[in-house]
Length: 155
Image (cartoon, rainbow, N blue to C red; front, side, top):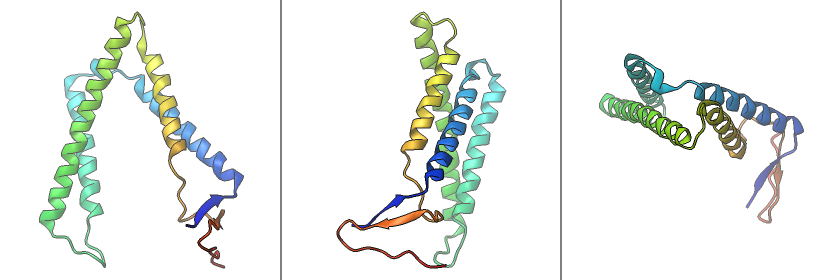
């Protein structure tokens, strides 16, 4: 089986920078306590994430050369993704509140900074563990693993 290795050291630095930026954003968002938001703001977040996911579902199933999905199918995908996204946001707020309360019970007076650090670390780890994308990376070189070597396309 043929695999790929990334021979460009700047690619790892780029991934590390992306992971750090994503981790910082995740940590900063965790500092906001959803329980302190007004109910109307929380509902707006549910609707907003649901609408965004629904639009993504609608446009991702747009007719193309290979497939021509009907409007009913596209609407069902959009509605399903929107509903799942809104429910996922609500579930995330419930889990956040439970973690917050558990840390308070354990004597941590202000758990938000600890939660933010934990969120940032987990996010960085997830981004770094994600396999690199190969489609547009010019620094990829084929590796022969016994089946046969691939040649790089010449531009």
